[in-house]
Length: 354
Image 1 (cartoon, rainbow, N blue to C red):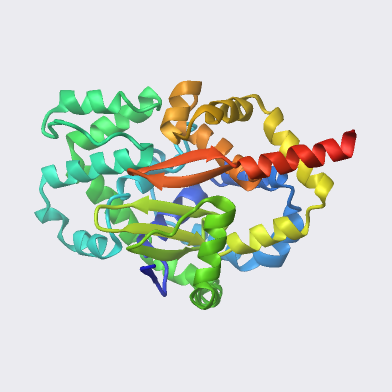
Image 2: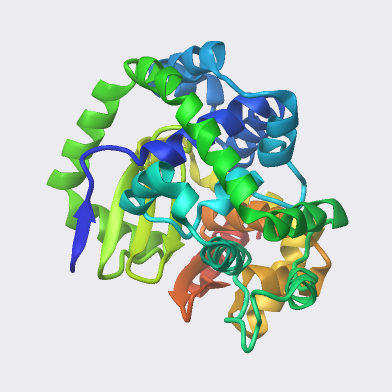
C-alpha cells in the first residue's frame, strides 16, 4: 500500500475549517451534541477527557479572526444544503503545494483555469458524473450544470457569480486565508503537541488502523493517498479524490471517539441506538433503497428529495451504528448495507424480547 502520512496539517484547509466553525459556532455546537447523543456517547466525559486543548485552540483563533460580515456570509455561513461552506468547496480540487504557489501568483492564472477548478470541485463535492461536452466558457451550459445540483437557488446563484468572475472570488478567498494565518499560528500552539503525538501514533500503527477502517467502516486507504491530520474536524475522516492522488483528512480524535463509543456501550445500548436509527423515517427509507442496490449520496438525495447535507448527516449516523458501509468506485462514495451487522442486531433483538 502506497500512502504518505504527512507530518503536519494542511494549513489552508485548517484555516478554512476554523473560520467556518467560528462563524457557525451555535450550529456546530448543536450538531456536535446531536452527534454525541445519536452515537450514545456522554459528551461531557469525552470532551473533558480529550477536547480541552482543541477547544482552547478554537477559542484562541476566534479572538483573532479577521473577516468582514459580507465575506463571512458569502463563503462560510452554514446552509442546510451544504455540509461545509462555499469557501471549503472552492478549494476542493487544489493540492496543498499547488495552493501555496497560487496564493503568490493568482494574477497570472487564467479565468479558464479557475473555472475548471470550480467545476471539478462541484463534481467532487456533489459526486456528479464527469461532464461530457460541457463548454466551460459558456454561462448557459454552466447554469445547466448547476441546475443538476440538489441545492437552494440562493446557493446556485452564488456559484453562478463565482463562475462569472472567478478571479475576484478566488482571490478574495485566498486573501481571507492569508489574513488569518497569524491568528492560526498563534492558536495552533494550543494543539501542536497533540498533533505531533497523533502523527507518531498513526505512523506506528498505520496498517492496523487502515485495516480497521476497511473492516469496520468500509473506508479503504487506496494507493497514492496523502493523509493529513485534522484538528477542527477531529472526530471524522474526510476523503477528497483529486486527479493525481487521493487526500484523506484523518481527525486526531477519530480513533478515540470510536474506542470511547465501543467501551461505553452495553449490548442493550447498542440495540437502542440501532432501533433509534431505523425508527427515523428518512434513515429507514435509505435502508430500504440500499436493500436493492448500492447508491451514492447525490443519488440518495435525489430519490428522497433531501439535501446532500441532510443525506450526509443520515449516512454518518448509519455508519456509526454499523448499519451501512461505504466504498469508493468511479469517483463516487457508494453506500451499501452491512448485512452481517444487521443480522447480528436482529438476532440480539430477538434474544432480548422473545
